[in-house]
Length: 123
Image 1 (spheres, rainbow, N blue to C red):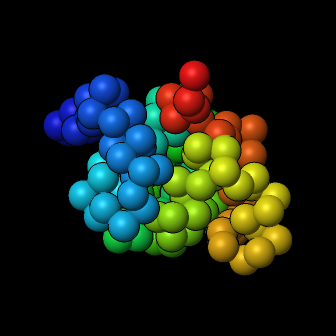
Image 2: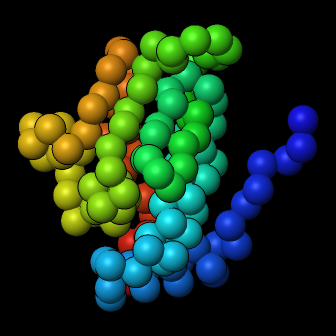
């Protein structure tokens, strides 16, 4: 299996900053989403939860039983703006769930303990 493509952290952080400055910048948004999904997979390694942020990316993360076929039992799906709000701390997990901006199914589909991501926090 080829290694997973990685976004350079400096490029990823710059994309997050560019998205914050201009949320309509599609290229920055796409890079920021991919970078933050990769960061989530780094801090919560595993294959138990599939995190989907269409159309920009998806990743499997969180330790536990590995999913291999069919529809995963643990899925988190949201739009790019909500995902970036979650990973930057602009919105909490509970707020996003309550508003219906995040669909989370399965007993392990709770990312609250990993959000916001340290890599996206401003100093």
